[in-house]
Image (cartoon, rainbow, N blue to C red; front, side, top):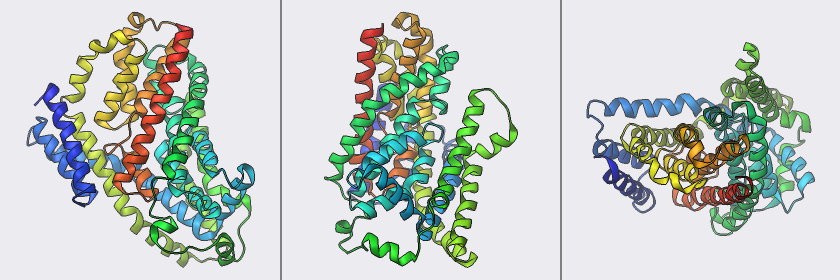
Length: 451
């Protein structure tokens, strides 16, 4: 099956997957894997190749973010059980006020995701988010969505994340990364505002599993939580397991942008190694709170039990994305790109959005779209460095639109945010639609003045 029938089959499969998970209560892992197998069969992948495609999708997800999720979750557990997460939330509340934790989350997410992948960033910052919810009594869903949107905007718009850098190079403006960063930062503002207000809105509509009224039980007050730790650690040690990995990854990104090859910096800046350093700081923090290595063993054991289901569901999403890549769907979309080329600056946005929805990866959507758009730049009237940078942002806006079941980030956000799949579509998927469209509106306004 190819062409339009395959796209229709894809839509039907996604609907069936949502129904299986939300209505029939089939576990997401089994639902996604079944739909991936069904799509592989109708998509024309040879029967003998299907096991290998499924295996590569599964292992590929584990190799890219599996260890990152485990180490990030372990850092989170260390921060939570040492009292450091509460100390960090105290510092954040002092800066933004008790009534605005969502604003803190969206800004922190945006800053952290400039050097750090959004998946890793969410795992790293989740302990602060959870403690802010406990500290302020605000909506857990609102803080989850605010953090997710902030991370996603920077991930798709601002170098040194790989997507925008690759797109800039492909479009011939690799020497103008500062321009891309500046326009990306400017367009980020309305996207962040839209994400913030959407988070406040949806937080009133959806409840997460870790909210008191959703659980039907009482939770400890902030004062009771602090008392249970005896004495909270100092601010420097509390932030170190998070800040140090971010600094290491940022340094590696900065050296890479400057074309400086320093093996030690590259090694330490790899997300797996950077987070391992964060774990070491977390162990030091734990021991400073008069805990023992036996406590660390128990924390690790409990964390692995919690992270296991998240890893397998995320890997299943990777399988679905890999299956789609191995059908002719993406090839069909790209080969018919000329049909949309008459719509100017909206062309890269729509093409990127279609590719994002089809195969799940924002980075793949950005790089593939840039490759298609590059030879069309003169015909689209996008010939100056500024218009080229604006095109990168239009592609990034499309690559946000939307995050759903074939995107590993969707599963990171919904699982760590303790939401079920149907709520994930109401929050993460709808939220990425809001910020993607808001961003593209601003890109279009800027294009009207610049072209």
